[in-house]
Structure formats: C-alpha cells, structure tokens
Length: 251
Image 1 (cartoon, rainbow, N blue to C red):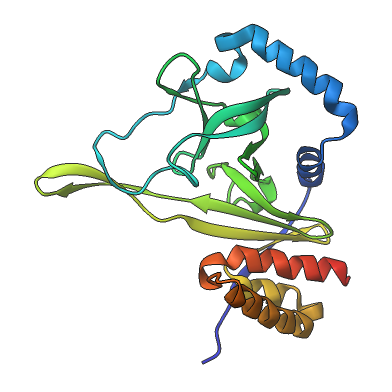
Image 2 (tube, rainbow, N blue to C red):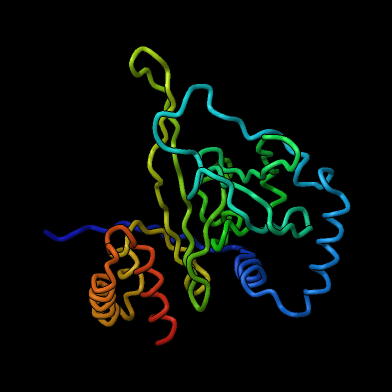
C-alpha cells in the first residue's frame, strides 16, 4: 500500500529565524565582556530581576494521574534565556507545552514564574534551543504563539512545534488530571519558504531534488541506529537531522 504524505507550503514574508538561532547557538568571544556585565547586573538585582516579576505558572486543580505539562523533565532544567534584551544564564526553568509559556523557578519561593512570551527572544532548555514560533508557520494570527525547538540550522533549517493537552477526568470517584503525550509539528525552511510535514517520509518528499540519494542515506542511518541499539521509530528526529546534514553537505 502506498503511503500518502501531506505537507503545507508556507511562504515567508519576513522571518528573523536565522539571526536569532545563529546568535544563540554561536556566541562569539566578543560577547564575553558583555556577558560578564550582564551577570553582574542580574546578581545585583536578585529577586527584582525582570524574569521574577511575572504571574504564577499554576499547578492543576486536581492531582496528576498521568503525564506532565512540560517539555522533557517534570523538574526544572538549568538553561539560559534572552528576555527583554537581557541575557540570563543558569536559570532553572520549564517549558509548559500546554500553556505555551516559559516558567522559571523563583529563587526565594516555591513557585514557578510564567514569563511574558512576547519578551522571550530565545531560550536554551539544557542543550535544546527554542525560539518564538515564526509567524509564517501559524494557521492564523490568533493561534497560540508558543515556541519552536531548533533541530537543524544550516543551509536548510528544521523546526518542531510541540503540543500537549490536559484532561480533567473522574477516576475511582475523584477528579484527576491527565496529560496527553507530546505531539510534534515539523517545519522545513528551504529557499525562504516554510514547508510543514508530519514525518520523515514527508521530509524526504520535500527534498525531491535528492530524493533517491536521501532514501539510500536513510537506509544507512537506520542500519547505523540499529547497530547502536537506538530505536529508529522512537528517534525519528535524529534521523531527520542526519538527512538534512547530508542534504546540506551535498547541495
């Protein structure tokens, strides 16, 4: 049976993606003095720093039975964030995928502070880089903004937008909270145009100018991952990155 793959072409009117991603991923030595000054500035402000003045990222009304609203770990992960023009480093934070907001651990209280998403220019959650979702990838102007994780950023770029849902249900005569599994929505940026796709087959079809080569390379990636004891189906993003690395190198 032939598999049907759906994707959407999204023209880019204007996107700051490259400047943001490359700045975040490759800080130059010239920025060291500025980073030191910013660290001193943050230290002097303490709990009065801008990232600690937002509203609270709330806990669910009912006990959690299954899942979590956050990307990755339920626990805070240290990272860095460029917020309202100021760089904060070694900040314990979460990305709440359900509410589409970044939350940071308050240094004095047992509370998560939700940041103003419009002031977040980028953030690293551990080693994962997130940027504001480009306007050209949204279904409508009123859609939740959220953030995209940058998986690849060279001649082509690969972004993924994550989503989760929260359900309040009755179980054993009491209300509990369940969270769905992480859902992924992928975007390929190629020649100034965003293409939305669902899976690795969709990515190969989008790169049709090298489709046969990529199918052969994909087979090698599958074999390599199998030899390394890595599940291909559970790590499709690894394979997507590998394909784009090969594609960009042979353009």
